[in-house]
Image 1 (tube, one colour):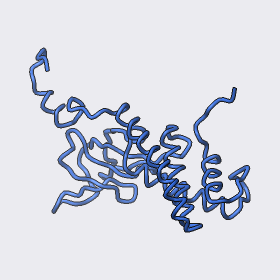
Image 2 (cartoon, helix red, strand yellow; image 1 turned 120 degrees about the vertical axis):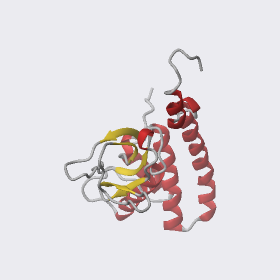
Image 3 (cartoon, helix red, strand yellow; image 1 turned 135 degrees about the horizontal axis):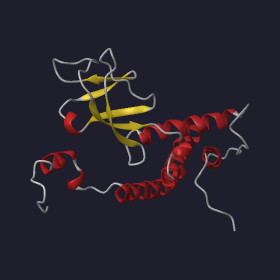
Length: 200
């Protein structure tokens, strides 16, 4: 019995190539055909676009402190940030690798204390859960096909598979990170002020 495993970057690229009527490749290292290189670039592009929305698997909360210059340096693969918890009233964004304060009339990259941040990370394709890999591969296959062959009819058929994969991804998101008032920062702030022992 053959084990079913998540898509690798190579298998995703080959799916893209086959979908466009191109020859699959055996490796993505060394010298690769132009079509395979373009397919891989499309996969990376689509992966970044999908991940930038922020999902349960690439979003984490950190408390980061400024360095001696007052700058808060962010990880290289930080795609976006949002202030949370005690810091939620301070609007922020990413500037280069630094956290940037977007408060009107008080903008800048110098902070006087730590910030609680929700950070969306860009992950390598093979670090993603299987359902996300499948959706990204199918979407990249459709994008590549339209760009390379302008075949709108087949692209519409591919879109149906893509939409099913997206629905599966959203379903997994809800299971892993259900929408819960008890989990929201606003409610946690209120709950923290309620005397202990009170049943909610």
